[in-house]
Amino acid sequence: MEEPGIRRRRDDDMTACVEALATVHEMDRYPARWPADPGSWLTPDGLLDAWVAMDGTDVLGHVALTRTGHAMAAEVGLPPDELASVARLFATASARRRGVASALLATATAAAAAGGLRLVLEVEDGGGPAVALYEGAGWRLVSSRSGDWTTADGRTALLHTYLAPGTTAR
Image (tube, rainbow, N blue to C red; front, side):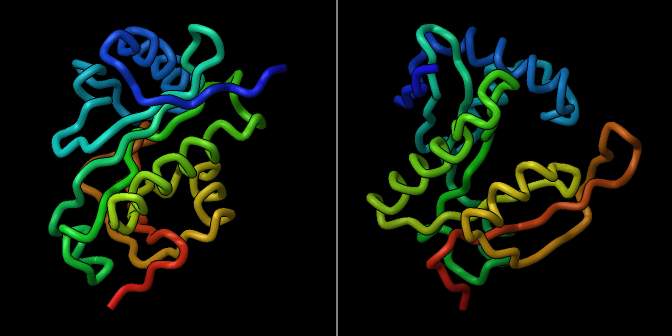
């Protein structure tokens, strides 16, 4: 099978992105609660850029970079204007074991570095494959805290904040 291509997300990709996200939600419960407006969910406040992994016209995965809020910046001990956050990263079931999520993460990492930004991200404890991806790529756990929402199985969300490799907190 041919390697998927990664490119910047375009407005005309949104329908395919939402369809791909729906398959991920059905299989993995990500996001934990299906958003009322999934297109807006994929375009969060503070969006800096977004990319898609494509196989022909099929979206295989997605990642976004956003501005980092003050709370997450405080958790890693760095100013928010020096940071960007990885958000809305997913790969469809058909893209698993093809390196799609890793390639999307690498694309976001390179874009942040080009802009002089350090990367952080937040992941829910139940996201085992995501945690394995980040830790396997050298991301460092810097804090954990209870979320203000419950997971699909009814437990209070446990959120982990990670800092990209090569980045040190103060």
